Length: 80
Image (cartoon, rainbow, N blue to C red; front, side, top):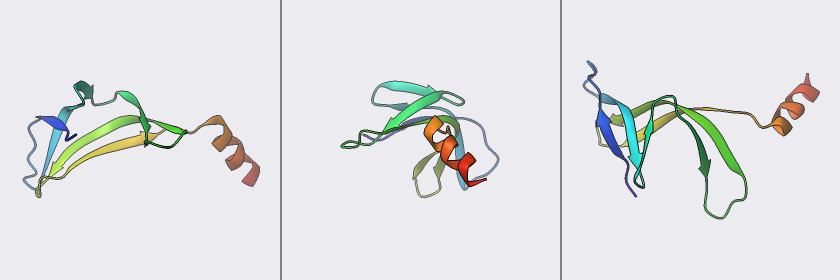
Protein backbone atom coordinates (compact mmCIF):
# COMPACT_ATOMS: atom_id res chain seq x y z
CA UNK A 1 0.00 0.00 0.00
CA UNK A 2 1.50 3.41 -0.91
CA UNK A 3 2.36 5.94 1.76
CA UNK A 4 0.23 9.08 2.05
CA UNK A 5 2.41 12.02 3.11
CA UNK A 6 1.56 15.40 4.61
CA UNK A 7 3.70 18.25 3.27
CA UNK A 8 5.93 20.62 5.22
CA UNK A 9 7.52 23.74 3.71
CA UNK A 10 11.02 23.07 2.38
CA UNK A 11 13.32 25.31 0.32
CA UNK A 12 14.92 22.31 -1.45
CA UNK A 13 12.98 21.74 -4.70
CA UNK A 14 14.44 18.29 -5.39
CA UNK A 15 13.34 16.77 -2.08
CA UNK A 16 10.14 17.51 -0.17
CA UNK A 17 10.02 16.91 3.60
CA UNK A 18 6.93 15.93 5.54
CA UNK A 19 5.81 16.11 9.16
CA UNK A 20 3.79 12.88 9.07
CA UNK A 21 3.05 9.86 6.92
CA UNK A 22 -0.05 7.67 6.75
CA UNK A 23 0.39 3.97 6.07
CA UNK A 24 -2.41 1.41 6.11
CA UNK A 25 -4.75 3.95 7.75
CA UNK A 26 -2.36 4.81 10.62
CA UNK A 27 -0.66 8.23 10.85
CA UNK A 28 3.00 8.24 11.89
CA UNK A 29 4.70 11.52 12.86
CA UNK A 30 8.33 12.54 13.03
CA UNK A 31 10.02 11.16 16.16
CA UNK A 32 7.47 8.34 16.57
CA UNK A 33 8.97 5.00 17.60
CA UNK A 34 7.74 2.18 15.38
CA UNK A 35 8.07 -1.57 14.95
CA UNK A 36 8.96 -2.77 11.46
CA UNK A 37 8.49 -6.34 10.35
CA UNK A 38 8.82 -8.28 7.15
CA UNK A 39 6.23 -10.89 6.18
CA UNK A 40 7.60 -14.38 6.72
CA UNK A 41 10.26 -13.30 9.23
CA UNK A 42 9.93 -13.79 12.97
CA UNK A 43 12.28 -10.96 13.95
CA UNK A 44 11.07 -7.37 14.17
CA UNK A 45 13.03 -4.12 14.06
CA UNK A 46 12.42 -1.09 16.27
CA UNK A 47 13.29 2.41 15.14
CA UNK A 48 12.49 6.10 15.45
CA UNK A 49 11.29 8.08 12.41
CA UNK A 50 13.58 11.08 11.94
CA UNK A 51 12.79 12.07 8.34
CA UNK A 52 9.99 11.56 5.80
CA UNK A 53 10.74 12.72 2.26
CA UNK A 54 9.48 12.53 -1.29
CA UNK A 55 12.16 12.75 -3.98
CA UNK A 56 11.81 14.54 -7.30
CA UNK A 57 10.95 11.23 -9.02
CA UNK A 58 7.98 10.79 -6.59
CA UNK A 59 9.77 8.13 -4.54
CA UNK A 60 8.91 8.13 -0.83
CA UNK A 61 11.45 7.37 1.88
CA UNK A 62 11.69 7.29 5.66
CA UNK A 63 14.81 8.12 7.62
CA UNK A 64 14.97 5.84 10.66
CA UNK A 65 17.31 5.60 13.63
CA UNK A 66 17.46 1.93 14.59
CA UNK A 67 17.53 0.65 18.17
CA UNK A 68 19.82 -2.20 19.14
CA UNK A 69 18.54 -5.40 20.73
CA UNK A 70 20.24 -6.49 23.98
CA UNK A 71 21.73 -9.49 22.15
CA UNK A 72 23.28 -7.17 19.53
CA UNK A 73 24.86 -5.01 22.24
CA UNK A 74 26.40 -8.08 23.89
CA UNK A 75 27.93 -9.14 20.55
CA UNK A 76 29.41 -5.65 20.08
CA UNK A 77 30.84 -5.48 23.61
CA UNK A 78 32.55 -8.88 23.20
CA UNK A 79 34.42 -7.60 20.14
CA UNK A 80 35.87 -4.64 22.08
